[in-house]
Length: 364
Image 1 (tube, rainbow, N blue to C red):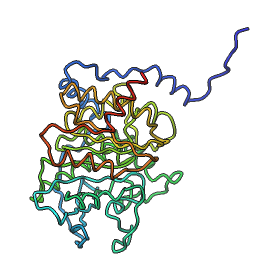
Image 2 (image 1 turned 180 degrees about the horizontal axis):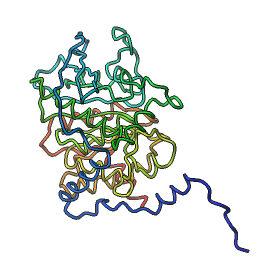
Image 3 (image 1 turned 30 degrees about the horizontal axis):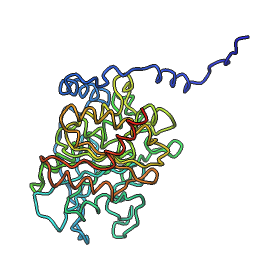
């Protein structure tokens, strides 16, 4: 007698079936990479939601400025779009001179941007220990690089004041954004773009050396910002780059990670591939349970194919830390500094990059 599996009631199992039987229609095939980028970038822009037609004046308002052992930090607020203001820190390193290279630092799900400068939320005169090497701006200043730390929508000082759902502060904003034909993901990318507008106003920034870095959801925004914003020259997404199939489509994730319909068109390697041939350092944790390392390695090898077709294979790096879901500053910075210091020259390939692609090819 033929064995039956019983009724299929689960929506998630149905979606898994669709996932397993969907071939992204704009997945990179090796034909004309520049034309492919142009087409896919336009589609991703459409999926994350349109940016505002009008760029209103930023009206920077400096709240305070203070010294730091590695330079100085000033806090200000800019107007990103009508009725949406954004707090930021600009961190100037003391061991280098303008025009500065700058990293835009975006935190993941946390109490906010204050972690990037190692100060307490609500008491910015008090130093704190930041776990997982997520005090990004401090590490930038130590290395002579300026940092712009932006407060992402629904985090920190921009946290939702309405009732939260299941403790998730992104839920209301993300759902409302979808109802309005936008996404919270796209709105956060637009804020990064407005941060770059602010950098252009300062006069002490090298606009050809602007990077973006972040961990977890900060990695999400780092990747999509790099893919969509042409003024970004370096990208360091941490603990996000993987495959959609094995990460945000495999277990529960915050709704802020999703762009409607993206699975029909692209995998994560394709989205990151829109940044080619510019330097990217992918950071991952060997035991990260949210973004499995085996899928990250597989996606990375797909990404390197895109970079290879641009003649820039050595601009694409993967560094893997021994632990879980966190940033790995020592490994990442060893690779990043090569790109900052010798941009435009042939780059020495990172040893983790070589080892990871070699091991992935052996498994195939």
